[in-house]
Length: 546
View 1 (cartoon, helix red, strand yellow):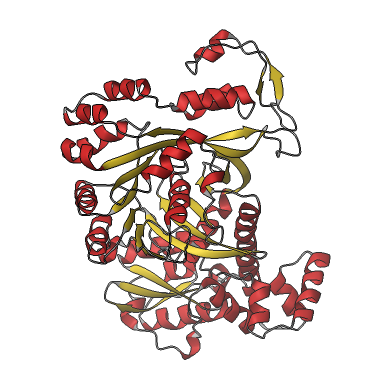
View 2 (view 1 turned 135 degrees about the vertical axis):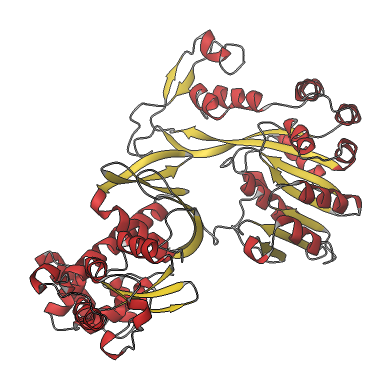
């Protein structure tokens, strides 16, 4: 769990709490960085600050005056590059170059040295004076020409420290505001002349802040350091994760990087492990769906699926269901990617593809664990599906998710992956399709009479009674959005003998869909229409999610 600079200094005994408060006041009054304030007040020296920064960056602090630098390493880059990057190669181990640097957030420098040397880079922190002195010493030894100190002067320590502190404050501010605002995802995007952060709130991306392009690489580098991602690698996607505390709330962040034209894009999914599962009765199921779903989940064997696009609340529904069926007289085991919420009484496992822990490999092992109920995070491939069917046929109840637009489309999706239709018809107990829709703000929603054409867009007949839409600029209660909170939209398919017969014949999705409706399935559109009539949401919102 990353701490800010002040917290680290107190934790490490460099400052007392009272000194930290004095330094914070000094910083505010004199508009200087916290580290600079502590040095000005004679609370710490430069060495103390470097040690704390090394802890914060999670890299070693190396005093170059006492370090045996290998000549083979220094020969990998020339003096000009070393001076421009304010860095010194220390040693090479296999394909990894250990690099001492004054600014760990200078991702351009790290990238360039990685490109020139063809090595993976691991960083250590050294002071600017140490780096400057070492460049003079080591590159004189190997015969590099000296250049005037006026042109090759290293950046002063306080300036580098101030820059690093500013970036850390920016990143901590982004994370703190995201957690406090109930954000589900943070998007950091390079643009041509700036770097932009957007927050996903209630399923919609909204601009949070923009920063100058000059800060982009350092902000990205800071997030990569937190997530234990290789900061020297910017040409291919990477995954990582870290924990962060805002106030008394601790969250986990799942991080993914993606190379783009203007620089790496980072997306961070915020997971709150303390949140726990929402009770099933609070998901918004209709009485009919609740009754049928509970019955389907009470079978001793079979497959129960939750389907929908990314961000539709599938995990929430699954966790609520697992919480409902969990008891001390059954053995429940899961494999997830990742584990989002932790439960007592459930054995939860997590995907680790590098270690060979795939969904299929985990499921194969889980079957030897004497389970009653199995939850597989996602049906991703033929092998996983076949193993799930085998588990269902041998007396286990299996829960999982799929990505399809409606419940009946799950059959064609599974058959497209090579699953035998007869096996599907004999094992699938229920399929729940869902979406998340935004609730209209009850303080500022606007009543009006919708036209016949508007109702036609959701495939429903018009009505005379007024309905509601969102106010364009919202109000203070909803954060000027017109919507506040979200609700689930559900479509439950419980297969009948007639529908299973169509499945075995590999009938088209449309035929399955028509039969399901004839036999009483309420569609997502039907449920959306009911939400519109009740004033919970708007026609525009139903069209957005469907």
